[in-house]
Amino acid sequence: MSDRLSISVVIPTYNCEQYIAEAVQSALNQVAMEVIVVDDGSTDNTYQAIERLANPRLRYVHQQNQGVSAARNHGIYIARGELVAFLDADDYFLPHKLSQQKSIFAANPDLGLVQSGWQRVDDLGRSIATVALWESATELTVETWLRFKPVLPSALMIKRDWLIRVDGFDPQLRAAEDVDLVSRLALNGCQSAWLKEIAVSYRQRSNSAMGNSLVQAQDLSKFLNKFFQQPDLPESVQLLEASVRYHTMVWAAWYLHHTGCTEEMTHCLQVAWQHSPYLPLEALIHWVESFSEFSQQWGQPLEIVELIQSSAWQQLVQWLLRQK
Image (cartoon, rainbow, N blue to C red; front, side, top):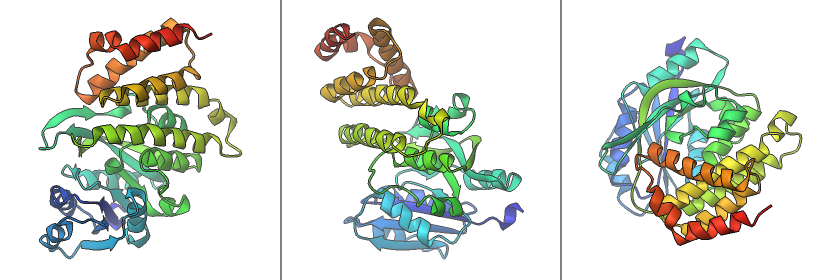
């Protein structure tokens, strides 16, 4: 049964000539029936980098720049495989990733999604940290997708039928589009499972981090509003809203702090406070502990003294202690 399942790998790319060949080759080295590169209007030498690979299983398509979600959706639409794996152009698969996920689908035909763990690497591919979120999100349900957001597009393999059923990625989201997708899949009954292996390298690039954090925070808010404003949400999911909004905004605040966006960090924590289950002093302790935990996961320990002595944090403390 496993041999009968075919895999399409969809690689969206935009001006990523430096890394695209490594990404494509990491997919061609595996059991993919086809590797589809969707060039989202690149103006660099991406096409030439792809052309040099010359492989009959490699398909290259070009579109006007519309964003990563639209590029992935184009790939989904033209894919011939029953299973679709995604790979961002600056990431790369580790050996046997596709065959391991395929085997899990073959053993459980009811599954619609299988996700692996991943490692963070730097610009040069040197390992920074491993991410094995099955240790905290043991079951991939609506609740765990929302609460922990244990998702990375390059770690996903999804049945194409399910992707078509939920209309793929939301092109209105520049970030958080992956959390949005898996949450909609789960809400519609798609069963998900872990491949409990580190099977992808996610390149944690140093450039544009500040801009990315701003987009992340904005689009996480958009996603939460979109998700919880859906009509006929099950009551069990509605009851998650305050907790999900709180923890999401605390993470977004940490990422903004991590990338130097101090003013926006303060705003995110003020939004988080609106949904906080804690008293003010408890919330402050939780924020510091959360920032420290997230920094450790990112491979860069938090400078706690520097944080709590900063003027932005001191002003935040004063604001918080005035709240009821």
